[in-house]
Image (cartoon, rainbow, N blue to C red; front, side, top):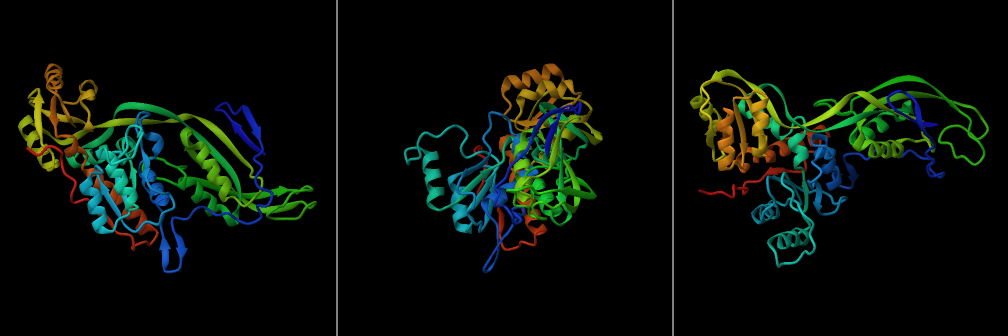
Length: 411
């Protein structure tokens, strides 16, 4: 019996998930690798899962476009190129380096495409990618918002401590899933659920708890039990496996769990947790190790973002300890930074009247540029992908950071 409860433990749904009666063999989790003659392979879909472990897609803003932009999910990956933007130069670099997957921060396709022709620059780019069988996967605001994502990287570049979120963008409830699994299949189900997005606590994924027990059942006529025989009570050594999952990923995790579970009817329960809720934030607020003058802070930022075209404005604050930041276009959060007690704010794409507002609020603003604050995404993504591949002892897929990506401002 599969049950779903709300936070008061009042039963709100009782449903049985009937699976294929012919399912009598184990369907294990989708492994990171597929073994074929010549060694293990990794698909575009599996690299997408790796990226989503760092930047879950449910964190993306509602107006954003993230995930696979171009390509086929099951394509075998021969090489990966990471970049801030997907430009013609980056695509040519991918071709030259033998990479058939580009992982970018900025989405290649942001608004709906009505045509893919050579009449527009984007159309020509998409056509070239398809012609050369190069896939594109983008992680945008989900990478900005994610714990350990781009804003946390920027905070580390500045050297901030005691880092917290700057502005809440959305709050999402958490659910607990409890599933009863034969001890022989606990790892397969655990990994399938974790790969689908369950068990995220801070910078840790696949967080679960299990306890041992005995499950009993009597298969009735017409059933095809994986263990036991029709008409006989069967006792099985099982684990009670527990984990948490955000609401947005609940259905996906349940599907993955059922797919990996050997039973034709899976016993599980779902509970909505009253506390804690997941709070997603954009931007960060932190504390410098030492209080700096505005002149010293200017030099710190120039050194922290060497590829940025730094401009400084607003107020010349005498003593700076608390610093806020938002990578990319973050002028809209100047007020939030000042309200949070920051003496300085680091972002990009700041306009003249934004600096006027900063001066009125008594906060220094460092405009390091959109490229300057976000080019680190390519290094962040590459390091994460390489780490996850190494964990699976995969060393045959090269991961490159783009050498052709450039700021669109050149003077």
